[in-house]
Length: 196
Image (cartoon, rainbow, N blue to C red; front, side, top):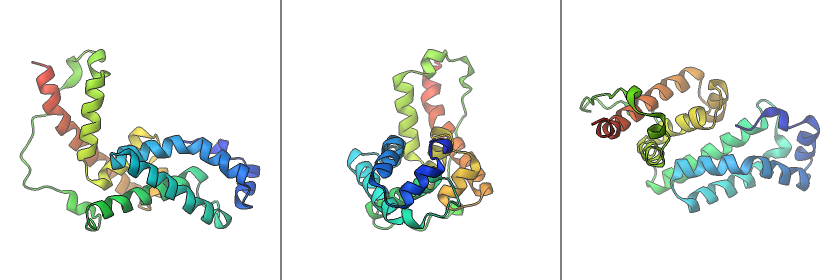
């Protein structure tokens, strides 16, 4: 997460006035995190680069009207999140509306949840385990994936995540619980094999 203190009132005024050097500074401070989010959401470099470029084009055009109702980083990540979801919609030929109630899978078979307490820390931190986690994240629906990435990977608070996604904090909590449960189910299959 980009810390708010990085964006001084002076920098904000320069940004709103169209100062290119200030905008360059904003891009330098935030592009790595936004690109990382795009890569994790979209799964390929080209789409992540397209999302990054569109995010900054839209931000640059909208900066003069920025009203400080949220932090610059929350505002920027909201633009990025919307861009990522638009790319996913286009990719899937207009995904249906993201309704959280549609996330429930009543026909799903129960999965045995494995207790990972007995695995050595080196196993949990291995490249293979990280790859399995990344694969499991890509299997989440876009709305669950976005909440998980913003909260657990990028470190935004519940309030910040709600602001980025334009939803309330209760919806963030619900989606985060569902995302974590789905990931736990997905990874249980992998860890069950490791514990044998």
